[in-house]
Image (tube, rainbow, N blue to C red; front, top):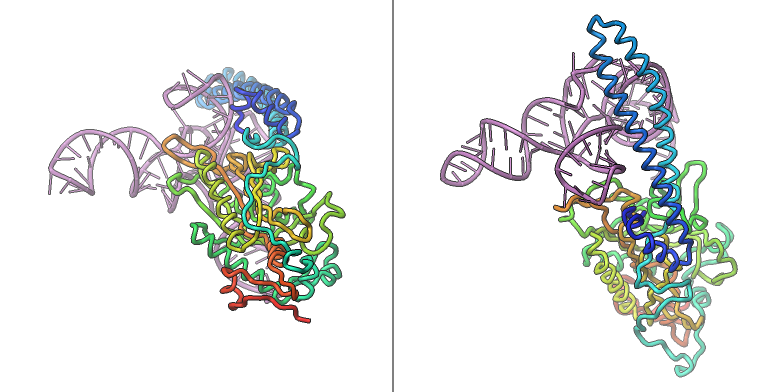
Length: 428
RNA sequence: GGAGGUGUCGCAUAGUGGCCUAGUGCGCCCGCCUGCUAAGCGGGUUGAGGGUAAUCCCCUCUCGCGGGUUCAAAUCCCGCUACCUCCGCCA
C-alpha cells in the first residue's frame, strides 16, 4: 500500500510510476475519487454520531428529574437519530471498502532508477567470473538432468509418478547437497547478523495479501480452499508477517532474518518452459534473507543484500551477471529488484539464481509493521533476497563444475559440508 | 475433535446498561525538591481515522475480533479467535 498523501499531493508522480510498469495510470484517479467519497462519508457519520452522544447524555440526566415530558421528547429525537446514525455508519463502511479495494490494486511506485518497460528491458550491471570454454577443454558438456542421473542426485520419473509434472525427488548425493547448501547458507547468514528461522509454509489470507502475492501473482499461488490456507511461494511471506501489527523500536533495527522453508508455485503460464530437469518446479526448498529497517536505510540495505548474494555465488565459483530488473518485471511490492543470473552452459544463457527486492513501506503498511522513533510512529521498510534456492543452485553447480568423465567438482567452500568430498562421481 | 474457563491501557487489576471523558497500583517519560541515588510531590504515558499543510487544537473509533439487542454497550445476546485446564487422537 502506498502513502495516500503522495497520491494526493503528487498524483502525476504516481501515474508516471504506473506507466513505467506498463500498468493503468487511471487507477490513481479512481483511488483519489474513492478517497473523496470515503472522507465525506466519514465526516457525515461523525457529525451524526457526535449529536447522538450529546443527546444520550441529556437523556441520562433527564431520567432522574421530574421533567417527564422533556424526557419523552428527548427519547423521541434519539430514536430518530439512531436510525440516521446507522444509515450513515453503513454508508461510511461501504465507502471505506470501495476505497480499500481500489487502493489494494495499486502496486508500489517503481523507482525512477528502475529501467522502464517489461521483462526484456533489464539493464546488465556487471559480469562476475569466467565462463568455461568446453570446446577448448575438449568435451561436450552434459546438461544437469543427464549429470544428475549419472550421479544419482535426483529422480524425476518417480517424482512425476507420485506428484505429477514438475516434481522430483532429491536422492543420495542430491539430498546431501541440499543439506550442505542449506547449512552453509544459514551459517553465513548468521555470521552477517541474520537470525536463523524455520517458518510455517502454510499461512492465512492476511499474510498472503499483506505481502502482495494475491494481486498480479495470485494465479501462481496454491490455495487450500477447505481451510482457507495458502502455501507460500517463498518464506518472504511468513517473515514479512512475523512482525505484523507490531511497533518496533527503531533502535532495534535493522532486524535481519534468514529462513529455510519449502516454496510452492503453480508456475501458471509457463507451460512448455523449462520442462527438462529441476530448473522450474512446483516445489523447492530455499534459504531466504529478510530485513526490516527504516525507509531511509532501505536503499543501502538493498545494496548489502545484493553484495551478500554476489559473495555467495562467487564462493560457489559460479560465473554470473547482475541485472537491474525493469519496472514491468517487478513484483507488486517492490520499487526495485536486482537479479543474479548464473551462466548455464548447456542453455548458453544466464538464468536467475537469486533475486533481491526493496519493498519500502508497501508490505509494512498492509501488515501494520511500524517503527517508533523520536519523530513518531511510521511504517518500516521490508527487503528480501535469496540466499540459496536449492534446485537452481544444484543445476548451476552440476553444469559449471562438470568434468570430462561425468564427475562434478565440489567448490572448496562446500567441501566441509559434504564430508570433505572433492568430487561427486557417477554411481553407474 | 469434545467439555469447561479466561481475554480491560506496557504489566497487574477495578468496573454487571447512562455518574466511563475506562479508575487504581507498578513500570516508563518530563518537571519540582535534593551533596549523589532512592523516597516524596506535580504532570504525562494505547493505537487508528477525520477536520487540517501541521508534531498545537477539535471530533470519531478502539476494553481479543465481528455481528446483534437498546435512545444509549467494557457491561446483555450470538458467532469467531487466542490462551489455560481436562478428555480423545496423533508424529
